Image (cartoon, rainbow, N blue to C red):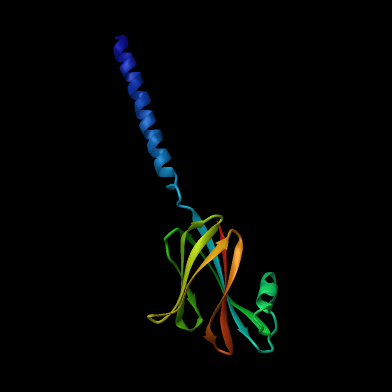
Length: 155
C-alpha cells in the first residue's frame, strides 16, 4: 500500500510539473520577441502662412532646421510590431509607409522604412532609433509642400 501512495504522490507532482511547464512556455514570449511601439506623425512642411502647429512643439527644434515656414500635423498613427514584422501606415496621396523593426543593435532598434506610391518604392532606408527616440524623414511632395514623417520608437 505504501508504494501505491508514493506512486500516486509522484504522479501528482509530475502532472503538476508538466502543467506548470506548459503554462510557463505558453505564457511567455520567446527570447528576443520584444514588442516595439511605433508612432508615426505625418506632417505637411511648406512655406505657406499657416505657421507652426502647436501639437508639434516637441519637434520644433528639429523641424525648423528643415527651412520651411509652416508645419501642420496631418495624422498620427501607432503600430505595435515585433522584430521582422511589417506594419503599414496610410499616407496622404494614396501612399503607404512600411515599417519593419529588423533587430536590436546595441540599445537601438534597426528599422527598415519604405514609402510606396502604387507598386513603386519611392524611398527605402534603414534607421537606428533609440528607445523613446524620434527620427525625422523628408518625404514626397504633397499639395503645397512636402510630407515629413516623425517616427518615434518606444520599447
